Image 1 (cartoon, each protein chain N blue to C red):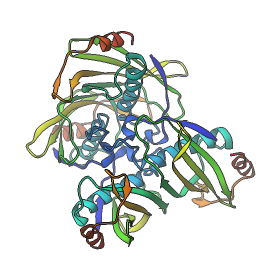
Image 2 (image 1 turned 180 degrees about the horizontal axis):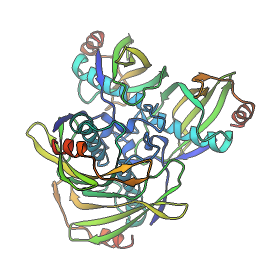
Image 3 (image 1 turned 120 degrees about the vertical axis):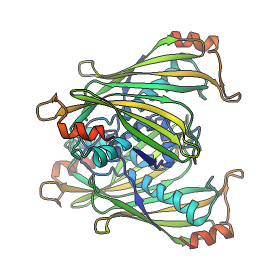
Image 4 (image 1 turned 120 degrees about the horizontal axis):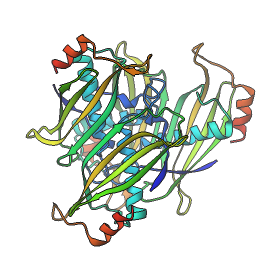
Length: 126
Length: 126
Length: 126
Length: 126
């Protein structure tokens, strides 16, 4: 799934680049859209984030149009991995990439639970 | 009440100045501290923000130590006004100033309510 | 000029509402787009923000689609006023409104300057 | 090096937890302080961030006092690794941990350069 990425003026720091922490926000923007539009998950998002990694490939200067891709790269019993690629849309070159590990979670019980079948299927579509 | 203001690298924009929207965050930081430490209010903060204004006096360049002052400038039946001054702590010159109007609110009833006596007294200490 | 407003998950605070400081960021998003697409101004934006006000009308709960309108409400010799309206796009009801005062600025000289004719004309189109 | 971590009300999301992206901002806050106060580096920070990882251990609910630790865990020819631990200061239990890889960089030449001796020594003190 590829989405245009709407940046904001205060995403950019004093060097004129997207600040490093914003990439996790961009990953989250893609994740929310993927969860609702492709996976078909509950808006309440009954999963927790366990890990996140980002590799910064080249700076995203202000004015460069960005896009983001998200795909499911691994599905385990209670957890899954999403991978992300932030692209410079002028030539689709890579700006940053990374991944997050999500754990299916029962907030009432306070513990991880197996991924339900319909979510598993939805994750497979991404 | 005067507080030191801990800024963050990504508060600063491409011109090397604190981004304008951050001043409302700084006002909020002062407000939370004032509410808890001086007014003695409930951490759940049963008030809503009705208005905010900021006047930008001079840019806050990265590296300049900042402080913030908050004081109660008006107390009405259901609402009160806080005033803020962001200072360049090198010489206490004014960087920005502004105000917010708060309305005492009963979230359960969904309506404004009179300011309780102990809050009124607490606001008067600020 | 009316724009859809793409909110982010971390724009929302613990009460599930858009945090108050974000409205200045939303105003900025509209301003940047208006400046580039309608006014036809220089991307370097040779103006400074002198004042900002926001009036919070109703909370923007997570999930509500938002839009923003920007218009020029006053043009003076060296400064102009933009007005903003943030709307709940389900019924176009008002969520928040506000204004900002901009001053045309010569960064090299460090002083306000008269608004050039082509900018004045561009502001009039908004 | 251990620092108190001043959180802000809009760091917390609708679940009342620090939003995941903020941890990279917290790492940056520690990094800036470490760079200036311990390493004795140039405020212009002639390094680039190449990678960042975060492992989220337990949610940081609003009201919990947080601290952060930063240490140098590896020094290579042109790059070094910093490790971070965000702590719940009530019992020093772990909230999140992670690392970032920095590359010494000559912005004028546009290329990585060996870490100068005085920086190498400074990194070793951390």
